[in-house]
Image (cartoon, rainbow, N blue to C red; front, side):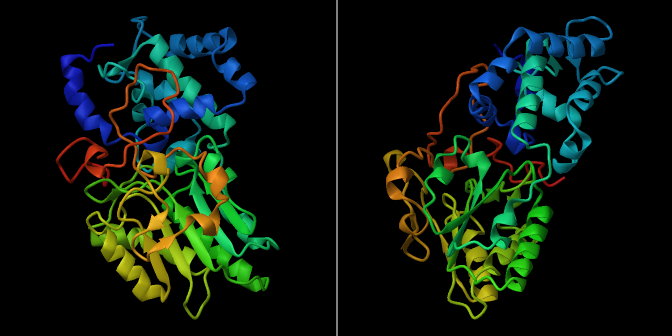
Length: 369
């Protein structure tokens, strides 16, 4: 579908606002990761009728479109009928219209019937996967587990489950989805879990790994919800520190532990090494991070943390099963095609200069508002 002239300008402004969970590639991968029977329901006639009924209800002028500028707030009203308030709250200020307009394929500020159906199908998929409910990913570390290491994995990076299926015995696994837990919630939960673990007399972990998409070339990192954390900005580094300190607190109190930040290029972007040095100073532990591509070797990645000079693969994974993980831990591009509904796979180019979040040269992309 061709993009309207007005759409080019709207697209440029809007791309940087797209929440993690609405990235085109991620939407397609989520749908196709469902059980086949559930997926068939989403593309069946009954679901199509359900979408049409909501669309017709809010298409008050019978134009065949829901418009962002309509005085009755057609799109916002339709979105609020589909998405729970608690989920919108997690998107930290993203307007209800923004969620639906992510499916506006020609960027003309309105949704046709099929575009709206794609949005409702996404919402149903998110509900089926449990992403509308608050997450508690750290229950695993408060149990009487025998794991000597902990790996925390973002589900945004591992939709097909091949990474966490490769985790070896003796490693505790905590899964989280960045659109189902805020930065503050993550920090509070990991800190509380650490206190509970000590109270139960469970030993500290030898190492803790965080597997997440890396930042873009300008040091903008999207580990939670929608807000970009600019690593070169002191105030943003201060925001991420409680999360990383909470993870480091699961290591031995007298130092000597290791925190592995498995994300492409984290140590080579602006602010990245400053964050690593700050963590080492405040925790007394070894902080390992990558200055190049982390992930599948056939696509240009590796599992060596150049800062720390450690190959993390044998510590956390069954390396034979790890070969099935075909992804690089690089931020997803925002220029993916919106017209295709086929799964795009997980092979990502690890070039931070080709994967900037907004496609703009402006450092202030609006995510901080």
